[in-house]
Amino acid sequence: MKHKKTVIAVIVLGLSVAAIFLYLRKGNGQPISYRTADITRGDLLISISATGTVEPEEVIDIGAQIAGQILKFGQDKAGKTIDYGSVVESGTVLAQIDDSLYAADAAQAAAQVQINKASLARAEADIEQLKARLVQAQRDWERAQKLGPSEALSVTSYDAYQAAHEIARANLAVGRAAIDQARAAVSQSEATLRRAQRNLSYCTIKSPVRGVIIDRRVNIGQTVVASLNAPSLFLIAKDLKRMQVWVAVNEADIGKIQPGLPVSFTVDAFPGETFRGEVGKVRLNASMTQNVITYTVEIITDNSNGRLLPYLTANVQFEISRLDHVLMAPNAALRWIPPAERVAPEFRESSLDAPGAKGSREEGQRASSRPEKSLSDGKKHATLWIRRGDFLEPLRVKAGLSDGAMTEVQGEGLKEGTEVVLGQQAQSAAGSAGTANPFIPQFGKGRGR
Image 1 (cartoon, helix red, strand yellow):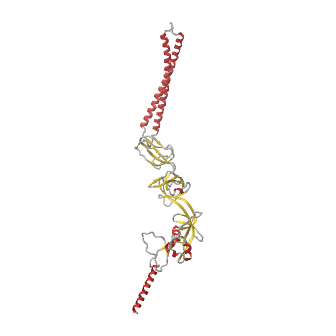
Image 2 (tube, rainbow, N blue to C red):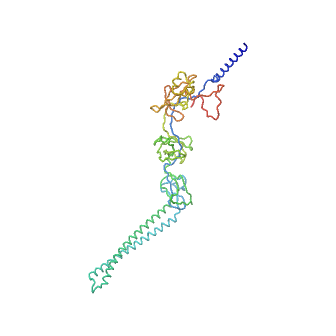
Image 3 (cartoon, rainbow, N blue to C red):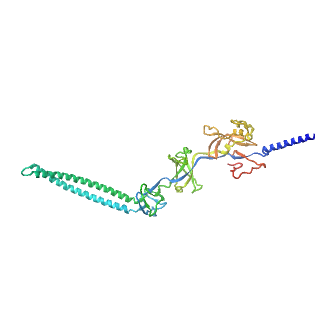
């Protein structure tokens, strides 16, 4: 009898321990805590981010067409020596190259023109002399023909007059050819002179446009050598009041970029200040870097205040779409899937009607709140979860555009300030939040985005 009581006591003790263990496994009696946020109303901007460079709208590269040493720089409109930032007008002298050799070539070419012109004048004078000789020979020959070979005119004389007439005619033709040759020589020497004078003019580097010097690439005393490529001396921006931003856009996003699309961008030089612009054109010559294809997009922006400087790095936002004064929910609220046992009993059957395997967690996955099939207006069905006592109640909504953090939502009973669940907050055995790993990102508790 005593042994039987001992067995019963052991069984009762075992059942008590099992009950305590199950109680502790169920959650130690502590209430479930959730991370929540409120539905907000505001403006939602859908954008594509990229990085670009601020560029002058039109840049002129001033080069040298001849070789020589830089002797001096010109002066800008303020009377100062040409340098970085100098404002120049069209025709302003930028630099002077040593012209001694080219001046000598021009003088030599001019002298040759005078020589050839003198030769032409002589040839023209000779032709008149040859014409006179031809007239005399013509008359002598005509008289000889009237007399003919006779006692008054020997055969020898007759032949001499005839030969003299033929020679005079030939000499006149030669004289006319000499005139043509002299004229061609004059034309050739004049062309050589024009070329020498043009090379001489190249020694004076002038600005072809009105603008601002943004780069000076030579110094006084430096020798420039023009061979196959003209050496660059100055870089002139025609108008710094209109700037461009050149942005490299990934091929996955380029289809959304169209001319006229509004753009906002910032530069590190002016933190907190936002500049506006619009897409001007999309260049078709794509480039590939490490198997990534990008297209260059030109953004036009106004720089009337002159704050934007050439070649600043710009952080660009292409404004693909903008929604004003709409209800927004955090993306985390749309992605979160509650366990099936946390769903209010009256909603479990309707919320867990998607196909899937059975089981507490798998049934929770069947209550997915991810956006589903697209609707005719481009929106998708989605589910938000709100707290009702100890359970969660689903709130069916339509999810629209998203900026990556917030999503436009619409639904019956949905209003600004509605509290939605972002996820479940872990609890310690003492009923307080568990100790968080300092190396794991922590999300805000309670309300708030």
